[in-house]
Image (cartoon, rainbow, N blue to C red; front, top):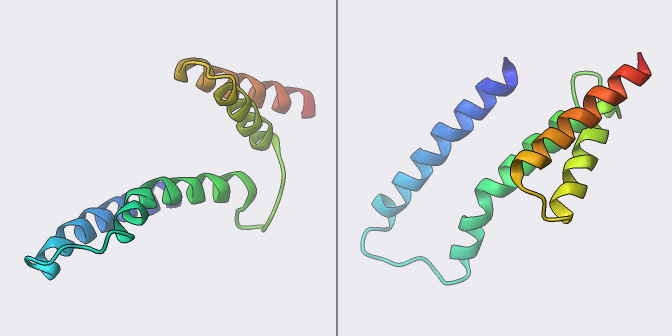
Length: 102
């Protein structure tokens, strides 16, 4: 539940910041170097949340079956598989790893 609350708060914060930017700048344009940085912020935030959920937690750094699933997803993306294949591969590898470890 905490992860979903965090995602919801980050979503609201992102919309507030995107709305406040034009209001604060008025008729001024952003510097050219800032535009690519701003465009990458959502991907960076999502990556950070995935990394925290995969490796972190209340007990600190740990490695479990989720890491195998993320690895399978990365391999499928590297092979340019369709998104549904990426998701099914990640879920299947995670489930199989949990089954073997249990």
